Image 1 (spheres, rainbow, N blue to C red):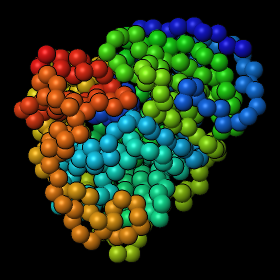
Image 2: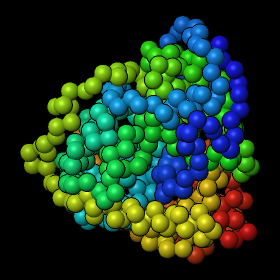
Image 3: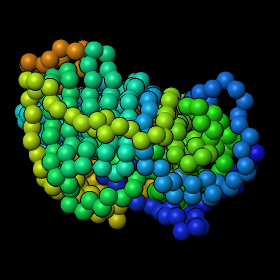
Length: 421
């Protein structure tokens, strides 16, 4: 049995439940859902045909505390990611190029196709299957399984790898980022993009407390586990997200599924385990050696962290009222469900190399140059202050002076963030 106790603003029990400003994916799942972040069907699908389990009654506060206080360090399993944002594939390609440029991974640099931030944008379109393994904060592995190709992210202590089999390119990072604390909650290696239900759920549950209502909405069986279901809803106007359903394992508090519904009632994101084990993965799971002939780009972890820290500071300034200044990076304006990502859209980026779209052939030619601004205008419609691309949940506004504003928000919120209303 469960009840439906609302939790707003703050939780007891010494568990943090406060707003955090993030960069693109951290802004997050409502934006990337998203940046981040980001960031998470009508209801969370029960992966078994039997009746919902009968569990002890818990309040929403108790379930959230169970999630944020979970000490589970090890797991492995298969994650299904299904997104239906209604974002044109051409726009996703341009966004990947823009992010690569903003992060300093231009298409002319080695290992660019293996860069996690741009590669994992593929999770924003269609259906994907991932194999994940975690053993504490310093050992993680994510394998994105594509047709005739694959993509691997591995962190093993102070060694991190990202490898794209379609182009046989790899990014190798050594050392630990400055400020690495070894906190118990692991993230996806090399990137803040949420690739598992745990990452997506934490972005929803640790941010936007003052603008969020949380209730317990029944139970379910997910990936063979008994789970509570949390219903997370915005209390502020202007968001295009109506509800997030999070399935939480009753035994250990690990989020097993996250499903996001838009205000039109459609499901825009469904991330769930199809199978999961909480046994410790074997040590060899996290071993990785670049295949023969792979083009490897070497980088120090501190170098990548410096770029992210710069963007973090800009995001913090943006959240305090800055209107998208510093367009060489990515900024976040506002917070909570109506956070808006702002950047300067490049006038030209190189399209993905031939054979890099998961067809199993190694790309040998550079793609043709693309003009993202022209692409947005061709796909959008004129509105006050610029051009709008409207999808089921994410709206993108390209201003007349080349700035781009995006978020899981309505047009008036974007226009206000851009200062064009």
